[in-house]
Length: 495
Image (cartoon, rainbow, N blue to C red; front, side, top):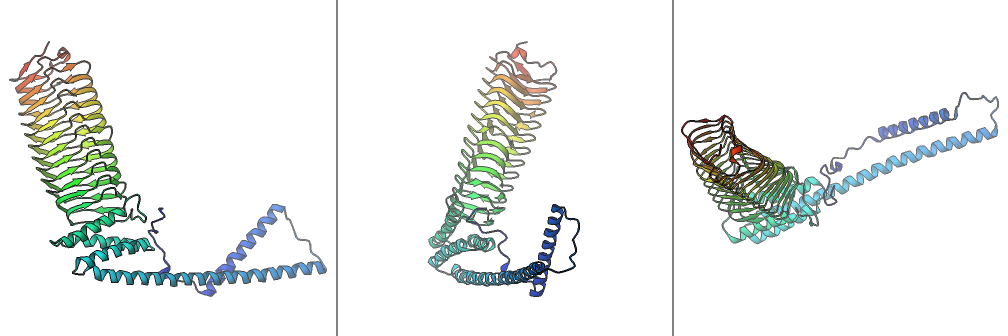
C-alpha cells in the first residue's frame, strides 16, 4: 500500500475492549503450559526416550536440579504476568492517544465546517485549504474520506453568480486534483469522489489518476468553459458520467489513458458541446456512450489508440453531431455502435488503421449524413454493418486498402444513399454483401483494384438503384450469379 495512504480499515482502538485480567492470565498460562508440554514431548520423541529410571534415594544433585527448575518456572510465570500487564498498559495508552487524536480531528473539523458556510468567499476559501490540510493529517482512511466527501459536497451546493464563489469552486477542484497526481506529497488516490449533480463552469482534473472504487459525475452539468482531464489515468473502479449534460462546454480527455476502469457516459446528453479524446489510449476497461444523445455536438478521437477494452456507442442517438476518429489505430478490443441511430451525422475513420479490433454498426439506422473510412487500412479485425439500414447516408471507403480482415454488409438494406469503394484496393480479406437488399441508392466500385480479396454478393437482392464497377481492375473475379436482379443497373462489370 502507498506510504501516504492510511489503512482503509483504520484502527479499532477507539472502541478498545480488554479481556478481564484473570481470564487473560489463565489463557496466557494455559498457552505456556501447552507449549512446554509440546516441546518436551517432541524432544523425548526425537531422542528415542522409552522410560524413566526410578531412584530410591533423592541425591543432592537431583534436589538441586529440581530447585533450579522450580525457580525457573516461578521466574517464567512472573515474566509472563509482567508481559501481560505491559501489553495491557500499552493498549490502554494507545487507546487514550487515539481518542485524543479523534477529539483533535473532530475539533478541527467542526471549526472548519463553520467557516465553510460563511457568507464571505475569503473565509470559505481559507476553510477549503484548511480541510485539505486536515485530510493530509488524518490518521485513518475513514477520516480522510470524510474530508474528501465534504470537499465534494461543497461543489454540489448551488452555485452563486459571483467571482468569489467561482474562485472557491475552482480552488476546490485544483486541490482535489493536486492530490490525485503522481507527484502529490500526500495522495488521495483510491478514495471515492462524488461530483454528482455539480454544475461546472470550467475546471482542471488534468494529470489525475482515478483509481477509487467510485468516481461519480452522475447528472453533472457542464455549462461553459473547458473541463480538462488531459493526461488523466483511469486505472480502476468505475467513473460515471451517466445522465450528465454537456453543452456548450468542452471536455478535454486528450492523451488520457483508460487502463482498467469503466468510464460510462450512459444516458448523457451532448448538446452543442465538444468532447475531445485525441491521442487517448484505451488498453483495458471500457469507455461507454451507450444510450447517449448527441445533438449538434462533437466527439473527436483523432490519433486515438484502441488496443483492448471496449469503446461503445450502443443504442446512442446522433442528431446532427460529429464523430471523428481520423488516423485512429484500432489494434484490439471492440468499438460498437450496435443499434445506434444517425440523423444527419458526420462520422469519420479517415486514415484509421484497423489491425485487429472489432467495429460494429450492426442494426444501426442512418438517415442522411456521412461515414468516411477514406484512406483507411484494414489488415485484420472486422467492420460490420450487418442488418443496418442506410437511408440517404453516404458510406465511403475511397482509396482504402484491404489487406486482411472482414468488412461485412450482410442483410444490410440500401433504400437510398451511396456506399462508395472508389479507388479502393482489395488485396486480401473479405468484403461481403451477402443477403443485402439494394432497393435504391448506389454501390460504387469505380477505379477499384481487385487483386486477391474476396468480394461477395451471395443471395443479394437488387430491385432498384445502381451498382457501378467503372474502371475497376480485376472485376471479372466478382461473382454475381447467385444474386437476384429485378430493376437495378449493374455497369462496368467484366464477365
